[in-house]
Length: 571
Image 1: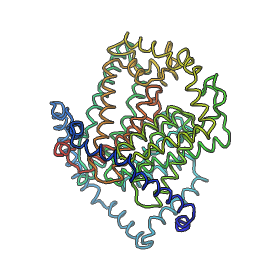
Image 2 (image 1 turned 120 degrees about the vertical axis):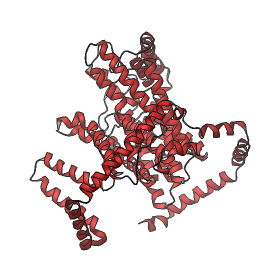
Image 3 (image 1 turned 45 degrees about the vertical axis):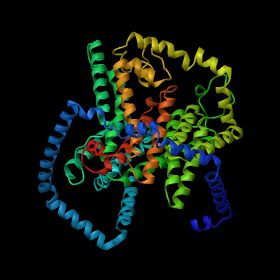
Image 4 (image 1 turned 180 degrees about the horizontal axis):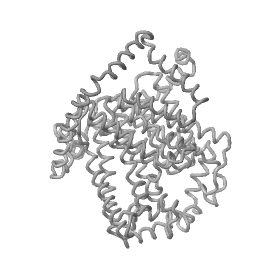
C-alpha cells in the first residue's frame, strides 16, 4: 500500500512543497541570523550559566536525610538478594517451573515462529466461547490471569497500563461491578507496585534500588500532606473521611511517577509507552469526532449564557471537553516530535495522521485553555529542537482554524469580548479568586484542610461554603496552606526542570525529541492551571507525571542499575 502512496502525485507534490520550504528557510537571511546569534551565544555568559544549571547535582544529595535513605536502600537491596536466593531455589528450580518450560518448548516446536500468534488465536477463541457460558466476572478473572502471565514475562508491560489510563477509567466507570468503580485505580497502583517488588526480588541482574532526582521532592510533599491531614483530623477529633478523600485526590496519581520509573527497563519500552499514549489519544479523538458528526448534545453549563453561537463541544469518553483537551495537549506534542525524529517514512505518515486527528479533536473540544497549552508546548519544543519554522506553521494553522472553523472563531471572539471579561469578573472564575485568597491568608500555615474547598471532592460532597475556584494553585494554597503550597511547587519544579535537564543527557534523536516535546507539554499544562483545575482530573495528573517519569528515565535511569545520582555527578 505504501508503494502506491509514495508514487502518487499528491505525495510527491507534498514532498516537493516540504523540500522547497525547507531549502528556502535554510538559505534565508533569517536562518543565517539565527545561526549567527546561536554561535555568539555559545561563547557568552548566559550560555555558560545555562550549561552549569543543566549539569548541576540535586542539592539534597548532600543532605544527611539522603544519606540515611541511601543506606536503607542498600539494606533493602541486600534483603532482596537473600529473598531472590530463596526464591530461585524454591520456584525456579521446582518441578512446576520445569514442566512449564518443557510445555513452552514443545509448543514452539509445533508452531515455530508462529507460536505466539497461534497461542493468541487459541486463547481468543476459548475466551469468546467462555463468554457465552460463564459469568462476566469469571471471564474477567480469566482475562486478568492471562494478562498477569503476559506481564510477568516482561515486567515492563505493567507500565503500559498507565498509558491507557483514560480507557481503563472509562471501562471501570461503565462496569456493573460496584467496587471496581471506586477502587480500580487503587487496585491498579497496588498491582503495579506488586509487580515492581516482584521484579526487584526476581530480576537481580537487571534491577536494584536507585533514586532519581525527582523522588526526594515528591516524598517530602507526601510527608507534608500526610502531616497536614493528621492536623486536620485532630481538629475534627477523629478520622476525617472527607479530608482523606481530598488527600487521596492530591497525591494518589503522583505515585504513577514512581511506578513508571521503576518498571521501565529499556529505552524501547519508554518509547512504546509514549506510543501507546498517542494511540489512546487517537482513540479518544476518533470518538470525539464521531460525537461532533452525530451532534451529541452539549450541556448548557459548558458555555456562558451570553455565548450562544459556539457550537457543540466534544468530550469523548472522558466526560469533559476541558479534560479531553488537556490530555490531547499533553499527547499531541509527543506525536509531532516523532514525525521529525523517526526515520521510517511509514511511521512519519502514521504520526502525521495521528497528530492531524488529535488536532481536529482538540479544536472541537472548544477548550481555549487547551489551545493555549498546546500552543505553549509547540513553541517551547520548536525552540528547544531549533525547528523555528514550526512556530510559523503553528501560527498558520491557528489563522486557518480561526477563519475556517466557526466554533473556534466564536470561542476566541467571545474570549476577547468585553462581555466575557465582565462575566468573568462578576460571576466567573476571576470573581472567586479574591475570596479564595482571603481564605488562604486566614489559614496561612495549615490551610482549611483537604477536600474542604475549591475542588472536585468538596463539590461532590457539597461542603457548606465551598465553591469551585478555577486556579489549581490557589485551590492548593487554600487547602494545604503555605507549607503544602511550597512543597507542591517544589515537586512540580523538580519534575519539570529535571525533565529539561534530561534532554541534554540523551544522544538518541527520538529520545531527545520526546523529552523536549514532553517538557513543552508539561509547561503548557502548568500555565493553564492558572485558569483551570487541571490536576483535579485523575487522567490529566496521571499523564503529566507519566511524561515526567519517561523523561527522567530516558535521561538518567536507563544508563544502568547504579544510583542515578552517581551518574549525574559524574557527568
